[in-house]
Length: 190
Image (cartoon, rainbow, N blue to C red; front, side, top):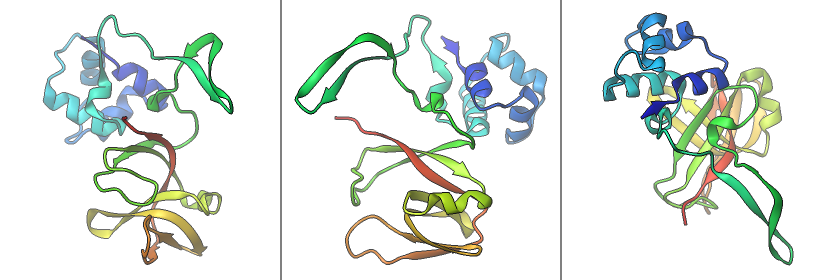
């Protein structure tokens, strides 16, 4: 198996030292370099540490030697499906463009337009960009390792009001969130 540590690290604009620093416990850039080049065996423990440091699921770090990029081959139009004249690479969560780190959330209980089994990819934004997230679905960190998720319906200074998905939900007010992550891609298995 070939790992994708270098590809993902570069897509996120991180150096070997950045990844090493974010590992728990911290390690050296040399160790990360050896793991990503295959000079050192990538154990499950290291996979989990590096995946957490990169903010991705551990399985994204691995790919088979002959695995190909999924191809976009068709599009759905008003009158039905039609083939693309030239197939192209499909967008993978790690290939989404934009500033801010990508984080993912799994949906384990259906709520609103989200179904159990969905995976939602979100892009983190800093407080100075919160105004652009109004009326978007966001994930907000809360004290004690908890989160609030839903439509951001209001922003007042350092407070944001979030309306969770689903009928009858009451708004949640989060004070001084260090970041918000806006929904960017929904992955749903059929």
